[in-house]
Image (cartoon, rainbow, N blue to C red; front, side, top):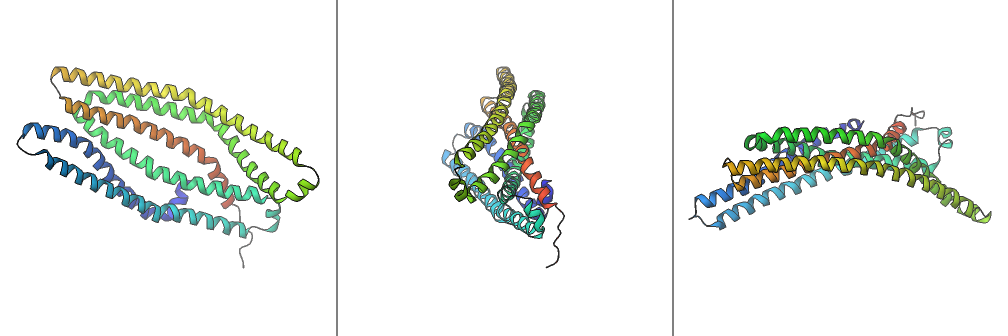
Length: 317
């Protein structure tokens, strides 16, 4: 469903992803630069350390400049234009619907559907662009040096990734029921709140404040109950996923210590491999967080799609 919204921005999206590949390659290369610097200094002791410092600072400057250019590109060509386009086509669809359709809607709920849907689509597109794609690229590039310098740890990390991914999918499937009900109540909450504010005069004049506040409080309590039930499921799976990653990391560290004692590697390489593994395992949480946001945005996005797919009945000016 998200690809339909992204279709007009495919060319700019391709530019952004190309720059992301370069940025992630520089990031992985920057991690190895410290290993190279340590070995270089130990081998050529007559060369001043200041030259290495200047080279590393220049490298950091290039990386930061590229990162800022990518952020500006995303904001200028994707994020803000996408938000504006979705808001405009949503308003156009509302104008095309007949009066009977509007009489069957509440203005507050209709505005909430558009606001929530557009916001979630843009947030999900941004998460995929700035988190999923960089994480996937970084994971692939991180695995290359790990396979080259310590191939024995690759099966451990692969098994951890599979178990972590399976637990994440199971977790989100169990949270779907609570999440769907919560978003339905968010729309009802927005609609009721707008209606109550618009009807403030008769509500006060006829003494209905207490009754309305009581009903509104019950709605908020149902939202709280479903949110807490969802968090309870998330906490149960969070412990399991953390333990999977912890076991995988400690096993890898044990392997590197064994290789160091055997003389098959040095301390600089162990530091580099540990940094790569920490980065790789951290990317697993990026995937989990992104998947959670995608699931969180599915219901508002479906609601927006149903609105935009409504057959237009006023097509002539």
